[in-house]
Amino acid sequence: LVHKLINYIKDENESARIVALSFTNTAAGELGNRFNQKAFECQAGTKYEFNNGTIHSFCLKTLRKFYFLHKEPFNYIIIGDEDVLDLAMEISNRLDGKYTVDEIKGFLANKFSCPQEILDTLEEIKSSYKLITINDILKLFIKELDTRPEFTEWVTSQMDILVIDEAQDVSKLNFDIFNRLLQSKPDLRLFFVGDPRQNIFEF
Image (cartoon, rainbow, N blue to C red; front, top):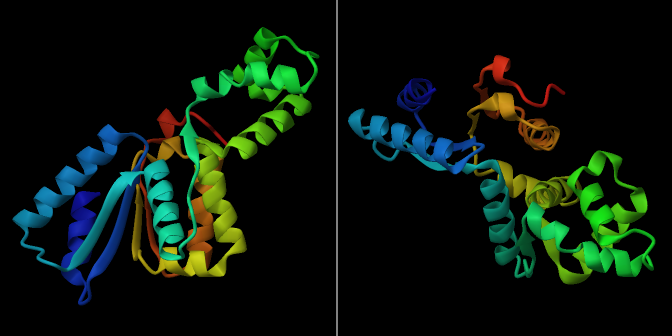
């Protein structure tokens, strides 16, 4: 993958804007280190811009920067899955004790079997406190792509090449983002690199 990118940079007359993403900080860091080292060895100079990170960090940084440029507050509090479980007490109270706290925690741990009224109440609480989960970041990114043409144009103007390492771990939300970017910029060079034998979602 690194050799492919280096060859592309060397063959292009204009500077290439590369966004290289993976699914963990470790994998993203390794990809970035290997690319930068090879680019230095090949004396690629300034013929590229290289942005590297996880998919979630890319979406979060992009949203924050866009909001900042448009003088809009990005005042969300990012919470993890364990923090969501801590909202079980408030969910129970808002539903007048219809479910116990332990029952709600069990449902939230396995959302596929979770009653819709619990999920709806959870979303109400998150909205009222401006809470956002890791997957909510991706959903917000998709929402902006779908509702704000200026956001889509701004995002795609900053990339000529989109690289997805460990692509067998792509989720439906990830795929929806990449698909929208490619539809918005048909000449975007998209590299998916992964081992299908290690696929965990199989959608």
